[in-house]
Amino acid sequence: MRDPDPIALFRLSLLGPLVSRTQLTRGELKATLRELAAKEYDIPDSRRRQVAEKTLQSWYYRYQREGLMGLAPKPRSDQGRSKIDAAVQERLLAAKRENPRRSIHMLRQLLEAEGVVPRGELSRSAIHRFLQRHGLSRPAGADSQPEERRSFLAERAGQIWYGDVMHGPRVLVQGRPRKTYLVSLLDDASRLIAHSAFCLAEGAVDIEGVLKQAVLKRGLCDKLIVDNGSAYRAGSLQGICARLGIRLIYCRPRAPEGKGKLERWHRTTRSQFLSELNPRPLALEDLNARLWAWTERVYHCSPHAGLAGLTPLERYQQDLPQIRLLGSLAAQLDTIFQHRLQRLVRKNGTVSYGGRFYEVPYELTGKTVWLLIDPHTHTAIGVEDEAGTSLGAATLLDALANRHRRRRKPTPATVVNLTDPAPPIAGLTLVDLAYAQHYGPIAHRGAADPTSEEK
Image (cartoon, rainbow, N blue to C red; front, top):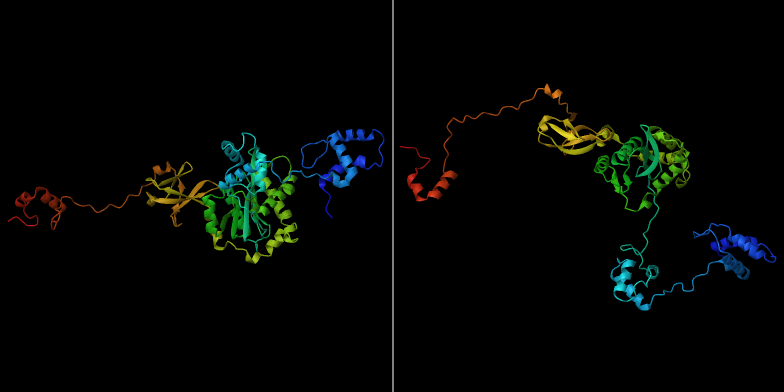
């Protein structure tokens, strides 16, 4: 048995005061219809809020004759048939198939320019319905079949992490409100939050800071899936992931379905965390402290419908033996997360960064080096060569202190006494050959053998 049409049920609910009566007195039908027409309704699939009196009257009589089926919308008598002339239809199909990139506007212009139809006679909606019926209304380059998408789950915790940013509430920074961004990393298999924090920006430095805390707390993931934002495309993040052995994967543009689990975390955060906060702005540190407490005490310990009733923490703990730990990388973690910028060492043994000069080992003068930067303090720390070998520290230039610093002088080279006679040159020199070629036989008669001694 088919379910009743929802539109028919809605119309029946409006006629309730009339159809529930077995008999109406004289004038009662008209008065009731007028009363019903004066009310406002939430009409399905419509922006209108009222129903006309004559429309209500027609519904009432149709219900009396046909019952509930009489209140269902009637299909158009011309449904499936186009009012466009057959010759125009053929030209439209041919023009669209010749160049699938042609828009409705271009098709109409083309047919009007060719004289197939008078100007302004063919409507956009008629062309759209006609092309849609022939399967030609999809955008240029779109697949003829819908793209197949399947739900999937990582085999174990730590195999796949997702990273994304959500707009957060305002916080107080030095007494003034500032917007925040929630940067989160979520484990696919367990739905555990590797780390999440509200930041004052959504740049590469903020994302790298969250990633650093995540690997310290939860070890290393195999794959990190992020969107195509400029912050995720930064060379610094790509270099960090490469040094940690993490494969950085970018979602396709305009395909948010690939990060549905993380979008669900954002929705949970809005409905269960942000909705419970005091409306007054908090300090950034206080907001993050509350987020971390709620994440560890509530979210990680609540049964998850997608985990067969397990909590994210319980599911994550099942795979603890397979989690990839930092190991020897832990001692190098600060260095791994430093940024590297290429610089040429000046003649005075300095390099520039952020409008300031740093002194490096003087032996590097004139060479190209890689300057190590702490992105959170915006200071230079040291220098490396292209292979990553440390070449020394970088210290902020103190020009006043350099007044009293002793300069190292290069070792003097061997001095050549220009007054000593040079040893004789065996054979003809380039000058002798040029002289002979220029002056010809005269040169041979007037010149003696340069290698012979005067007698």
